[in-house]
Length: 240
Image 1 (cartoon, rainbow, N blue to C red):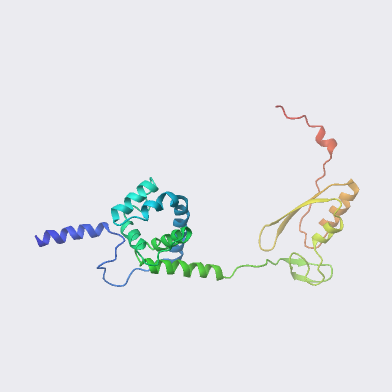
Image 2: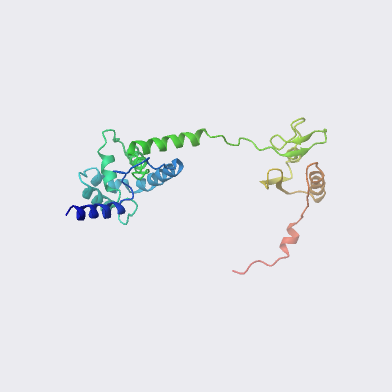
């Protein structure tokens, strides 16, 4: 009889991929970024169903109550139920469970993100630590590009301009704002950019400014494409 009971317990435990009860050796390590990402995901869809889920979930006293609350308040849900019902019930019964809606959602999501591999409290701590780490991580605050300026400076630019004299391609555009309609600036790589300047005015003024822009030091390639209302009007209107 004892052997049969042990066999039943062994079969039961093989299906339990979350519980760490009776596990010998060190606890498995969890990926902090994966736990935090899972918590953020849980926060999102709990936010969408909380108004339907919470009234019955707040009254849950057993695992069956939790399963019933999810099935009625979140039909078609397969992420939590029935596997996470014991963990959900444990979190709900914590004395520190919040009273306000948003705090409740965040508390439950962060507690469940560890999937029971760690305690709900440790799961929340992991989420908080990873969010703080991501917030304080270094990030690029300015890109610098290589330029050659007529003042003699050669080296990285500062805000797309010469750091010595401040000259830049945009200076020509500001000086000719009457015919500059729009600009498009795109970064191609760490050293190259693509800039498209839309001009409108007399052909000689457009040609003069285009020549100056193309001849600016640092411009590797430039081309002027001109059009006029007369050219456009030669095309037949589209059929309706």
